[in-house]
Length: 108
View 1: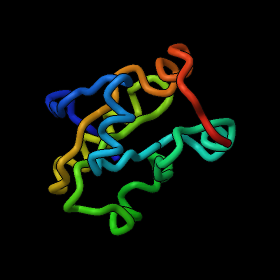
View 2: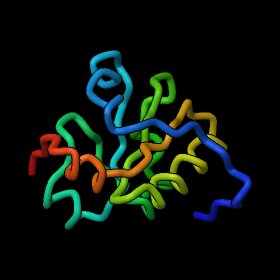
View 3: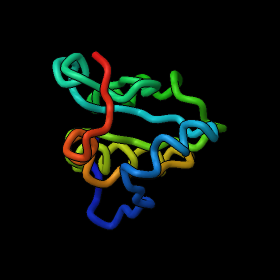
């Protein structure tokens, strides 16, 4: 999955996630299996970055979708790809690194 540098998707911050989930936003975690197992946000859906193209049918095309990874790079690539495929998508700036540094909860 490639992402030309011109792909721009909205950026959202970690402080917006909890309220957004309550409003029906879906959170997609594109980290690898071991990263997911080490800790993730409750309510997130997990599809590793490399699997996104073949597993897009698992995502709700009618719900806003926020994408997260470790620091924001992989999620930006996934968000740009999903945006090109018609999803209402935003990238979570700072990723799980920022989430954990802010002392926010994870489950494993």
